[in-house]
Structure formats: C-alpha cells, structure tokens
Length: 107
Image (cartoon, rainbow, N blue to C red; front, side):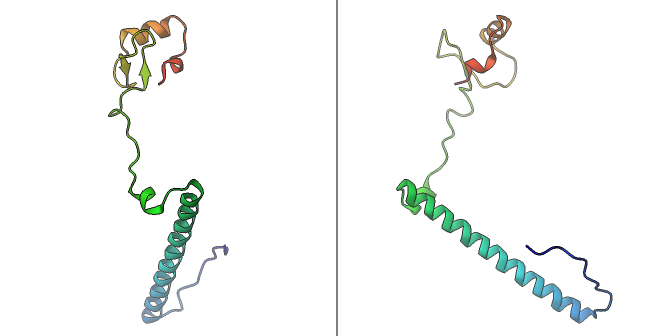
C-alpha cells in the first residue's frame, strides 16, 4: 500500500481538479470491484472446502434460534428460560445468590 502524502492542489485549475476528481472516483470503483472479486473467490473456496454449492450457501439464512429466547435455562425446569433482558426471574436470582455463576445457565 502506498503511503498517503499530501498533494498540493493550489496550482490546479478547476478543470484539472475535476479531471483529477474523476480519475480518483474511477480508481475507487476499480479498487472496490477488485475487493469484491477477491471476496467472492474466498467465499467460493470456502464453499468448495465444505462441500456446499455456492448457490446453496448464498441462499441459506442464518439461524435465529427462538426469537431471542433461550439464552439462560433453569436446570431444574428446562422449560423455563430467560433471554437476559429485563428483571432476572426468581430462579436466576436464587442461582446467583447461591454463589453459582450465571454463565452455567447459558444454553
């Protein structure tokens, strides 16, 4: 990568500055296209390594779990869970008050 150096622009005319600005914009577009191409090649290689067709990989949506729930689960009653927002349920408070780490409840 080139070092960024200050460019003295005071000697340029308006037309020259506009030409320079267009050249900079063209270069930015080219660098962006090159970066996207490189990223695509990397994703294609990862898909090949795991044996998933690229079109299938791109069509997959990330798993969202159960609408933000299930972050902490009551070990005594697994149907009870808490998403970590709002007031702690009594079972979470009792667990922590007993000196047990909250992290042990993480699902």
